[in-house]
Image (tube, rainbow, N blue to C red; front, side, top):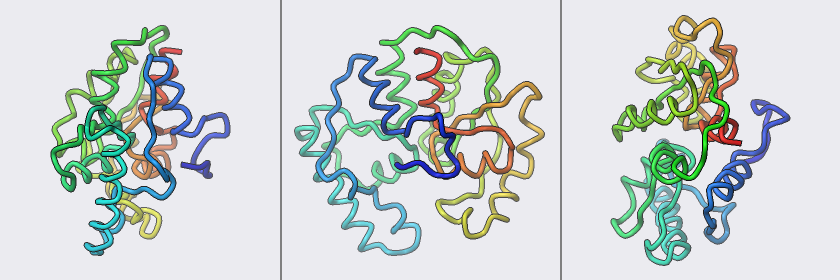
Length: 219
């Protein structure tokens, strides 16, 4: 994931930040081969290209099977929508873990929260709701901040890349967003970059991966 206009210049790339966070928590990280060409397949599936989705998803599964020694090691996904899609597509051999569960169950027990944030906003993306992780997202956020506002919205409306092409969808999906953000809150977190871009645009505050929150409060 490269830098773009929606990422603050003093932020590490998510992949680099995640690497540093996991190493600090005592993990050894194994990356699949030809990492830059891997994709869960969702961008193809959402546009109706079923064959391309299957081909890409199968290639990723095979690569992760090899990297994890046929499921011996858990596989971390840093975005909830990608995890959800792979969960639907993959066989049972792989232990893939969504970002919320992995941080809560694997990482946080190995780190010490040193400087909790005062107030943060957190947005559960659609896939988080589908896999029933809202309570875990709240629990994870409450480890990192004294006051957590869970944004209530059926869907942010960004819908993959649709928010880039039809921004009105995003604007409508988040029409009640600003009213939900406390006056003293200037930081928001979620588990999907495209959703975060839309949230940031509509809210006027910084939205990024919850991994950044975890890294900051445990640094």
